Structures are given as C-alpha cells and as structure tokens.
Image (tube, rainbow, N blue to C red; front, side, top):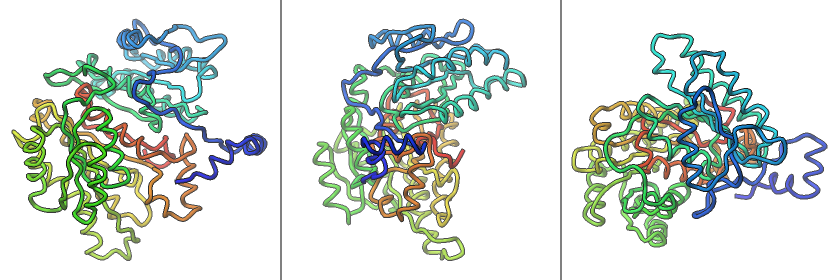
Amino acid sequence: MTDTYSQFVNSPLGKQVASRLGIPRPVRLRRYTPGGALLEGSVLLGGYGDAPLAKRVRAVLDAEGIATATEPPTDGRVAAVVADLSAMTGPADLEALRALVGPALKRLAPSGRVLVLGASPEQAGADPVLAAARRALEGVVRSIGKELRAGATANLVLVEDGGEEEIESTVRFFLSGRSAYVDGQVVTVGPAGAGRRTPQSWVAPLAGKVAVVTGAARGIGASIADTLTRDGATVVCLDVPAAGDALAVVANRNGGSALQLDVTSPDAGARIVEHARTRHGSLDVVVHNAGITRDKLLANTDAARWQQVLDVNLLSVLRMNEAILAPGALSDGGHVVVLSSMSGIAGNRGQSNYAASKAGLIGAVHALGRDEDLRARGITVNAVAPGFIETEMTGRIPLATREMGRRINSLAQGGLPVDVAETIAWFAQDASAGVTGQVVRVCGQSMLGA
C-alpha cells in the first residue's frame, strides 16, 4: 500500500516543509536481509555492577565481528546501546542506566537500537525496593522509545533465574533488522527445556523444521510462510478451499505443500497433524494466523455475527490445540504462535467480537506458557499482537482513519506484513526456547494499548 505522506516528507521539498512545520518525518526502517550484518556499526555496552549479561552479549557481538565500547563516543555514531541492569539492588542504581544511555542517545545511528537487560520483578519476592527498581526499567525503556527518532527503537529483556543461557536469540532479534517495527516491548526469558538450542546457522535457524501456517493464502499469512521458508523451514500452507488458487501459489513458491481446510472443522487439528507428519515427517511449528472480522457496534451485533468471529478466531484455535499439543503430535521442543491484535489489548470501536477473540487468545497463551507439562516437553506458546500493518484490509480503511492509525506510534508509520512474520520466526526458533507465554506487540510502540 502506498504511504503518500511518507513519500512526500522524504522528498527534497517535503523535507523542507516537514522541518519548517515540525511535523513527523517517518524514515525508511532498517530491515533484515539474509546474510546482512547484525548491526552496521559499533555498540556501546555497559551496565550496573559486574553486568553479567553484558558479558554474554559481548560474546555474541565478538562472534559477529562487531566492535564494542564502554564509554559514549565523543564523535561519530553507535549502532546500538546495550545496558545490563540485571545486578541492580535498588532504585538508586538506575543512575547507571541514565549515565550510560542518556549521553549516547545523541550518538545513536538511524534505525539504531537501545536494548536494556534486567532481572524479573516477579522474582523479587517480597522485597519492595528490589521490585521497584526492576519494574522501573519498564517505564524508562518505554519512555526512551518515545524519545528516539530516525527509526531507532528501545526494548527491554527481563531475564529470570536460570534464563541467562537463553538470551542469545532474543538479543539477536532486538538488535537486528528483524525487529524493525517492534518498539517499547518487554520480553521475559526464562529457563528452557532440554535439547539443542543454538542453530548451526543464524541465517537458517529453522532448517529441518516443518511449520504449518493457517490463513496462508494472502496478506500476513503469506508473508509468514515466505519468512519461515527463508529461515529454512518446510512450510505447510493452510487456508479454506475457496482460497485454493491463491494458496497453491504461496505453497508452490515456497516449495511446501497446500492444505485446504476450514479451521472451524472439528477435526482440523487432527488433519493438520496427520498432513504434516505423513507428508513431511514431523510437525515442529504451528502458526495460528487465520482470522476474520465482522465489525459492527455492539448494539448492532447479532448473535450470528458474534459467534462467527469467536468460532474462527478463538474457539477453532482452542480445539486445534487440543490435537496439536497432545503427546505424539507437535514435536517435543516445538513452538506454537498465535496472532492476536492490538484490539485484544486496547479494544476498538465496532470490534467487540474481534477484540474478545483476540484478548481470549492472549489468555490462552498465558495459561499455556505456564503449563508444566508443555514446559517439560520444551514446547513454547507465544502471541504476536500487530498494530497498524499495511495490508489490503487496512487499505480499505477510510483515509483519515488510516492516516491516524499510521501516525500514532513512535515510528510514525505503518508496519509491513514481514515485520509480523519476523517476530513469529523468532518465536519459532529452538534458540528461543526460554521465551514462552509472551505477547509482543508489533506496532511501532502505538500510543494505543498497554
């Protein structure tokens, strides 16, 4: 979809107009390309105390040939700032964050990254001082995200006890172009189950995996299929029979297989498992992307319109998961990712049925993330909540509403389907085994929602 405003303000004349009027000028975001550099420049790396997590980050950067510094530069730019505050003992220690990150923000390159590492407030016990310090990081990071310009982002990774060994895939995601439209988010990394977690290649971290994507015929679903294939997976593309022709196109270009299936069928989960295991030998990743909207004000929503959205978006996922998560179906160490929505977090006028379904998915993800049997099998369950993404659907929104949706976020622009797909691909990695029960908004830090 054409973003005429962005094209204009980035033209020679538009730059002058934007500068004089002080209006936002969204920039072209740095996005991931296979084989490209993790970061294009050096990293300022430090923190509080002995900063134990920073040592692990330095090892990752060293392996990528990326230079690190411990003092803000007096000239030039840094590609990222990584601050490890995991050793904090109280709010006074937050000064270490200000002293490191504050001066560096003026030296941050376009599409730069601010990544803060902390310990989990949930594991502070009954110590209010420690809990306050750890939770304070959330406010700081989200505020930094709203101060940044030129496509830069800020995110927070909280590490639980025993999760220290599991942070690499998450650090790589947030520093790279894969997280171009992920801003102001908080992700918790915990201990992971048994199994190999580090891929042989970070360019193809899903090599050897079999993934199923529902609603894959077009839009975000097709982009998810493309991205998982790019990362090495064999993809089963699933959609309703009416979308068969488009589905075949996506499956063929990805060298996968097509499965025509209504996700509301009582046996949909069993048929997914049977298809993946019979045709491809295993089932390792399931992405529940299929969904519909039937928007009306609640006062005008009849029972049929209400039930149809709940059936497709929520109840079908719960039913399919019964079969997919049964022993012997999804592989141990497998991954389930569901598509929620900002509507499920903030609500949306005329979308009470849709918001209910998407909020319900978040509830299910939180519950499954705490499921001890799934944790013992190394299975992760996470959700992505897209904000304004440039698709055919958002292209039909009236112009004024569409422009509002695009601009009310820290990056002042809509995201692309690939931004959603990249986040799903990160969740789908075995290297992300310590990330479960999480909801990440892909919204450019929208002003709507939590």
